[in-house]
Image (cartoon, rainbow over all chains, first blue to last red; front, top):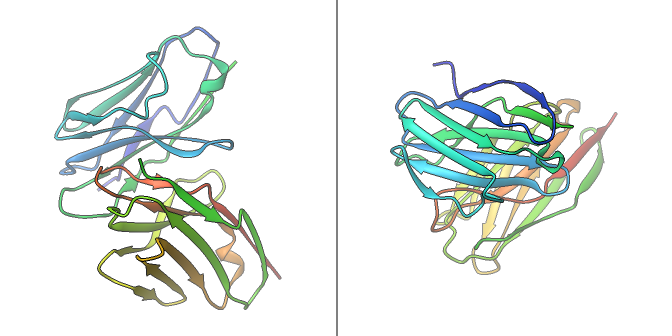
Length: 113
Length: 111
Protein backbone atom coordinates (compact mmCIF):
# COMPACT_ATOMS: atom_id res chain seq x y z
CA UNK A 1 0.00 0.00 0.00
CA UNK A 2 1.22 3.51 -0.78
CA UNK A 3 0.23 4.86 2.61
CA UNK A 4 -1.70 8.06 3.18
CA UNK A 5 -1.35 10.38 0.20
CA UNK A 6 -1.62 14.15 0.41
CA UNK A 7 -1.53 16.81 -2.25
CA UNK A 8 -0.15 19.25 -2.89
CA UNK A 9 3.02 18.84 -0.84
CA UNK A 10 3.68 22.56 -0.88
CA UNK A 11 1.29 25.41 -1.45
CA UNK A 12 2.08 29.10 -1.56
CA UNK A 13 -0.82 31.46 -1.93
CA UNK A 14 -1.78 35.02 -1.25
CA UNK A 15 -4.03 36.21 1.52
CA UNK A 16 -7.67 36.04 0.55
CA UNK A 17 -7.29 33.15 -1.87
CA UNK A 18 -9.06 29.83 -1.51
CA UNK A 19 -6.89 26.84 -0.63
CA UNK A 20 -7.87 23.19 -1.01
CA UNK A 21 -5.81 20.41 0.53
CA UNK A 22 -6.42 16.80 -0.48
CA UNK A 23 -6.01 13.46 1.23
CA UNK A 24 -6.36 9.85 0.22
CA UNK A 25 -6.41 7.52 3.24
CA UNK A 26 -5.03 4.02 3.30
CA UNK A 27 -7.47 1.66 1.63
CA UNK A 28 -9.77 0.01 4.13
CA UNK A 29 -9.23 2.57 6.88
CA UNK A 30 -12.45 3.77 8.50
CA UNK A 31 -11.14 6.86 10.24
CA UNK A 32 -9.60 9.97 8.72
CA UNK A 33 -8.06 12.80 10.70
CA UNK A 34 -6.88 16.29 9.76
CA UNK A 35 -4.16 17.85 11.94
CA UNK A 36 -2.36 21.17 11.76
CA UNK A 37 1.20 21.69 12.98
CA UNK A 38 2.74 25.05 13.87
CA UNK A 39 5.68 26.02 16.04
CA UNK A 40 3.44 27.93 18.41
CA UNK A 41 0.58 25.49 18.82
CA UNK A 42 2.18 22.16 18.00
CA UNK A 43 0.06 19.38 16.49
CA UNK A 44 -3.66 20.07 16.74
CA UNK A 45 -6.59 17.93 15.68
CA UNK A 46 -8.88 19.89 13.40
CA UNK A 47 -11.57 17.36 12.46
CA UNK A 48 -12.06 13.66 12.00
CA UNK A 49 -14.37 11.40 10.04
CA UNK A 50 -15.63 7.89 10.66
CA UNK A 51 -17.00 6.08 7.62
CA UNK A 52 -17.05 9.39 5.72
CA UNK A 53 -19.16 11.13 8.38
CA UNK A 54 -17.69 14.09 10.29
CA UNK A 55 -17.65 13.15 13.98
CA UNK A 56 -15.86 15.98 15.74
CA UNK A 57 -15.01 19.33 14.15
CA UNK A 58 -14.45 21.21 17.40
CA UNK A 59 -10.83 21.81 16.45
CA UNK A 60 -11.67 23.69 13.27
CA UNK A 61 -10.46 27.19 14.08
CA UNK A 62 -12.98 29.29 12.20
CA UNK A 63 -15.79 29.22 9.69
CA UNK A 64 -13.18 29.84 7.03
CA UNK A 65 -12.19 26.19 7.41
CA UNK A 66 -14.32 23.38 6.05
CA UNK A 67 -13.71 19.70 5.40
CA UNK A 68 -15.49 17.06 3.39
CA UNK A 69 -15.20 13.36 2.75
CA UNK A 70 -17.37 12.50 -0.25
CA UNK A 71 -16.22 8.89 -0.31
CA UNK A 72 -14.00 6.45 1.54
CA UNK A 73 -10.92 7.27 -0.51
CA UNK A 74 -10.90 11.05 -0.60
CA UNK A 75 -11.11 14.03 1.73
CA UNK A 76 -10.56 17.75 1.32
CA UNK A 77 -9.74 20.55 3.72
CA UNK A 78 -10.64 23.96 2.38
CA UNK A 79 -9.68 27.39 3.67
CA UNK A 80 -11.60 30.33 2.24
CA UNK A 81 -10.41 33.04 2.48
CA UNK A 82 -6.89 32.18 3.59
CA UNK A 83 -4.92 34.35 5.99
CA UNK A 84 -1.18 34.49 6.85
CA UNK A 85 -1.85 32.88 10.25
CA UNK A 86 -3.10 29.79 8.45
CA UNK A 87 0.47 29.07 7.39
CA UNK A 88 1.32 25.65 8.80
CA UNK A 89 1.89 22.02 7.89
CA UNK A 90 -1.38 20.18 7.50
CA UNK A 91 -1.31 16.44 8.07
CA UNK A 92 -3.91 13.87 7.20
CA UNK A 93 -3.92 10.55 9.06
CA UNK A 94 -6.00 7.42 8.90
CA UNK A 95 -6.59 4.28 10.92
CA UNK A 96 -8.73 1.21 10.82
CA UNK A 97 -11.50 0.58 13.33
CA UNK A 98 -10.41 -1.71 16.14
CA UNK A 99 -6.75 -0.80 15.79
CA UNK A 100 -4.97 2.01 17.60
CA UNK A 101 -2.26 3.17 15.25
CA UNK A 102 -2.82 6.25 13.14
CA UNK A 103 -0.76 6.54 9.97
CA UNK A 104 0.22 10.02 8.92
CA UNK A 105 0.55 11.34 5.41
CA UNK A 106 3.60 13.39 4.33
CA UNK A 107 1.82 16.66 5.02
CA UNK A 108 1.10 19.80 3.01
CA UNK A 109 3.21 22.83 3.84
CA UNK A 110 0.97 25.86 3.36
CA UNK A 111 2.37 29.37 3.16
CA UNK A 112 -0.07 32.27 2.96
CA UNK A 113 1.59 35.55 2.01
CA UNK B 1 -11.24 18.07 26.68
CA UNK B 2 -7.91 16.35 27.07
CA UNK B 3 -4.77 18.34 27.88
CA UNK B 4 -1.30 16.84 27.51
CA UNK B 5 1.79 18.46 29.02
CA UNK B 6 5.26 17.35 27.89
CA UNK B 7 8.69 18.00 29.43
CA UNK B 8 11.37 18.93 28.74
CA UNK B 9 11.03 20.94 25.55
CA UNK B 10 14.71 20.32 24.74
CA UNK B 11 16.91 17.47 25.94
CA UNK B 12 20.59 17.10 25.16
CA UNK B 13 22.38 13.86 26.10
CA UNK B 14 25.72 12.29 25.33
CA UNK B 15 25.71 9.47 22.83
CA UNK B 16 25.31 6.19 24.69
CA UNK B 17 23.48 7.77 27.64
CA UNK B 18 19.76 7.37 28.38
CA UNK B 19 17.03 9.91 27.64
CA UNK B 20 13.73 10.27 29.47
CA UNK B 21 10.77 12.36 28.31
CA UNK B 22 7.74 12.82 30.53
CA UNK B 23 4.10 13.61 29.83
CA UNK B 24 1.02 14.17 31.94
CA UNK B 25 -2.60 14.03 30.82
CA UNK B 26 -5.79 15.37 32.31
CA UNK B 27 -8.61 13.10 31.14
CA UNK B 28 -8.90 9.98 33.29
CA UNK B 29 -10.90 8.36 30.47
CA UNK B 30 -7.86 8.36 28.19
CA UNK B 31 -6.82 4.80 27.39
CA UNK B 32 -4.24 4.95 24.63
CA UNK B 33 -0.84 6.69 24.74
CA UNK B 34 1.39 6.70 21.67
CA UNK B 35 4.80 8.24 21.15
CA UNK B 36 5.78 9.69 17.79
CA UNK B 37 9.18 10.61 16.39
CA UNK B 38 9.38 13.39 13.85
CA UNK B 39 12.48 14.22 11.87
CA UNK B 40 12.88 17.61 10.26
CA UNK B 41 10.49 18.02 7.35
CA UNK B 42 9.01 14.56 7.79
CA UNK B 43 5.77 13.14 9.06
CA UNK B 44 5.30 11.92 12.66
CA UNK B 45 5.99 8.21 12.92
CA UNK B 46 4.82 5.94 15.70
CA UNK B 47 7.69 4.44 17.68
CA UNK B 48 5.89 2.86 20.61
CA UNK B 49 2.48 2.95 22.26
CA UNK B 50 0.78 1.70 25.39
CA UNK B 51 -2.79 1.08 26.45
CA UNK B 52 -4.14 1.90 29.88
CA UNK B 53 -4.36 -1.74 30.98
CA UNK B 54 -0.56 -2.08 30.75
CA UNK B 55 2.04 -0.44 33.00
CA UNK B 56 5.11 -0.82 30.86
CA UNK B 57 6.08 -1.79 27.35
CA UNK B 58 9.51 -2.27 25.83
CA UNK B 59 10.82 -2.52 22.28
CA UNK B 60 14.58 -2.92 22.07
CA UNK B 61 16.11 0.38 23.26
CA UNK B 62 12.76 2.11 23.73
CA UNK B 63 10.36 1.70 26.64
CA UNK B 64 7.22 3.45 27.80
CA UNK B 65 5.84 3.46 31.34
CA UNK B 66 2.35 4.51 32.41
CA UNK B 67 1.09 5.54 35.83
CA UNK B 68 -2.69 5.78 35.58
CA UNK B 69 -3.14 6.99 39.14
CA UNK B 70 -0.83 9.92 38.63
CA UNK B 71 -1.88 10.36 34.98
CA UNK B 72 1.60 10.43 33.62
CA UNK B 73 3.62 8.40 31.16
CA UNK B 74 7.24 8.47 30.10
CA UNK B 75 9.43 7.50 27.19
CA UNK B 76 12.81 5.96 27.93
CA UNK B 77 15.52 5.60 25.30
CA UNK B 78 18.66 3.72 26.31
CA UNK B 79 22.07 3.65 24.61
CA UNK B 80 21.19 6.70 22.55
CA UNK B 81 22.58 6.97 19.04
CA UNK B 82 22.95 9.93 16.66
CA UNK B 83 19.95 8.74 14.64
CA UNK B 84 17.78 9.19 17.74
CA UNK B 85 18.07 12.97 17.31
CA UNK B 86 14.59 14.23 16.43
CA UNK B 87 11.47 15.77 17.96
CA UNK B 88 9.42 13.36 20.05
CA UNK B 89 5.72 13.82 20.73
CA UNK B 90 3.56 12.11 23.30
CA UNK B 91 -0.18 11.88 22.79
CA UNK B 92 -3.30 10.65 24.51
CA UNK B 93 -6.65 9.42 23.26
CA UNK B 94 -9.70 9.36 25.46
CA UNK B 95 -13.38 9.22 24.72
CA UNK B 96 -12.97 10.83 21.31
CA UNK B 97 -10.99 9.15 18.57
CA UNK B 98 -8.51 11.87 17.77
CA UNK B 99 -5.16 12.28 19.49
CA UNK B 100 -4.21 15.17 21.76
CA UNK B 101 -0.49 15.84 21.45
CA UNK B 102 2.09 17.29 23.79
CA UNK B 103 4.16 20.20 22.51
CA UNK B 104 7.16 18.01 21.69
CA UNK B 105 10.70 17.42 22.95
CA UNK B 106 13.69 18.21 20.78
CA UNK B 107 16.17 15.44 21.57
CA UNK B 108 19.79 16.20 20.73
CA UNK B 109 22.38 13.43 20.86
CA UNK B 110 25.83 14.86 21.42
CA UNK B 111 28.69 12.84 19.85
